[in-house]
Image 1 (cartoon, rainbow, N blue to C red):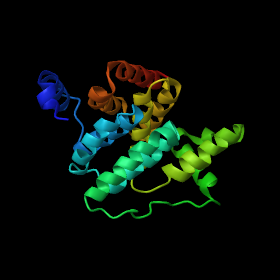
Image 2 (cartoon, rainbow, N blue to C red; image 1 turned 180 degrees about the vertical axis):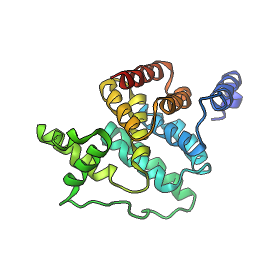
Image 3 (spheres, rainbow, N blue to C red; image 1 turned 60 degrees about the vertical axis):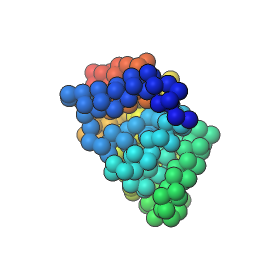
Length: 228
């Protein structure tokens, strides 16, 4: 559907805001790769599939590699679940195939079934501190979190730990209702060098796609992470 024909006034307002005002706001800018990484993760988080279809080709033209795009989608399974992640994997594959990119992409896996828990614990400790080396013992879900979320996904190449914490922040921010986890991952981002000013820029660039309430909640969570 051509929204420029059916809804010209809306498109004029949205495009001015999202692609001019927000992108060029002084002190709130991001490099193209980081901006698109944040927006793609935010769209997955808020289940914006149609908008994701529009944005992914732009992202691929602006520095997001096919591997980066796939890693963003893969990691979302830990924060949204397979049911909400799967449509984004499907459309990502379709868009990559349309561009003549052969699938599967090169492997980014660095762990095995034998060492995923150990490597996941190490990764948690690197991001959140030494106390995380004992956190996996609190119960089976904590063990799964270490082995599956961090051992299976955070240890993959294609994105570094700071980028992985960034997209996790965006998944949590955009889906809403995860404020305790959002505070925790805001702290994780800060530990990885993604400071308060950077995170506010991320929120600003995602705002047109996820709305004001969740963006304002994210700012509150960032401030609590800094103050805590």
